[in-house]
Image (cartoon, rainbow, N blue to C red):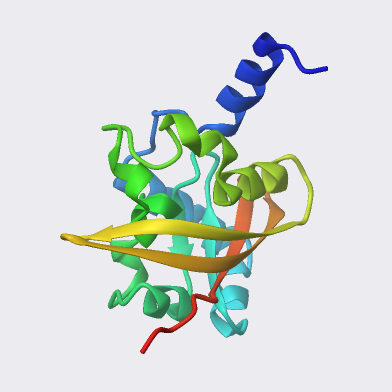
Length: 169
C-alpha cells in the first residue's frame, strides 16, 4: 500500500526542478562534450530525431532530424528548452518555470522516461500530449526512447522522438 507521503515523494522526484542552466552555460557544456567525445558526430549520422539532455532536462544539442521534427532551422533554437516546451505541451505553460514543473508532469511519460534514463536505465514509452499552437489545440503522439550517456564531463540522456500521431483528413 502506497502512503500519501510516498506518493508525494515520487511525484516530486518525477517533476523537474524549476532551476535551469543559462543558454550560455549550456553552449559551454556542449562545447566541452564535443571536445571530449564523438557524441555530436554520432547523433548527426544516426537515423531519427535525437537530442542530448542535461540534468535539468534541457536540450544541450540535437541532430538535424530533431530540429526538422520541430520545424526549426537549427538546434541553436532548441538549446536550453525542455521537451514539453519544444513540443508545445499545454502543461508546459501552466507554471512560469515551464515543462516538468506542473502538478500533472510527475506522470508524464516524457519526464518519467528521461528520469529512468538518468537513473541508468535504457527506457522507452509512448506519450500523447495536448499541444497548444496559438489558439489551436491538438493531440500528438510520440514514441520516446531515452538512454544514459556517460562522458568525461558528466551524465546526459540521449533522447529520441518519433511522432506517431494519426493524420486526419
